[in-house]
Figure 1 (tube, rainbow, N blue to C red):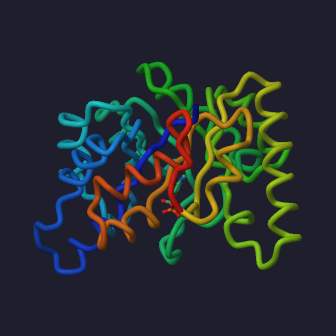
Figure 2: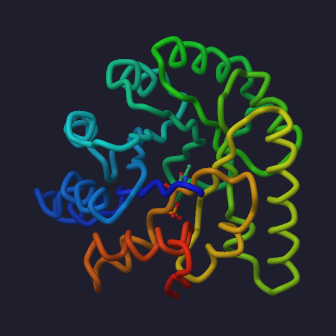
Length: 246
Ligand code: PXP
């Protein structure tokens, strides 16, 4: 059964809109665990637009499930990750002007630096995952750089304008999962996944973890965080005999 990592960044986005102390992403992490999350994911961005250093430190002390830090390969962040020592680090590209992470990290282009970061963090016992586009050369470069996992960028799937493109993007992901599994990589997926589009992906064999944020935070405004997580979890790994919700 695939695992659900709940990305809590946008709880912090609401807090930062007023530079106050609520809502606290640490509370969201507690609620996510109570709703059945298998992991808590957050992105400490260089511009600190949502998650703050304090959040990362308190999450490290309080989260009981897998803690996954999404991070750029900038030295300041790498040093922070070395000290924080989350269970997993997912290396992502980062541009200050972007609304959210756009596309995957170019592991082919930045191979030298990426390999160094993987080696430094792996030596401290962390699982390293590369957030990449579902492309053969990126998967191969990730295996070569020493990653234990890849997180396939699902943006093309999530934003497909019609059924044909949607089908193509799903096939591309299926194929990438096979390639990555043949290289003994764990395969995760994320970006743009929602209550409406996650089911076909959840049925793809070989995908072991989904990282989902915006859609869960959006639903939580209406149903509460714990319930929003519970509903997503049911779609990803329905209890035996259950249909899940939509
Ligand atoms: N996975 C990675 C690597 C991401 O950067 C993000 C966005 O922060 C997500 C998953 C979650 O994407 P979304 O908020 O669209 O669910």
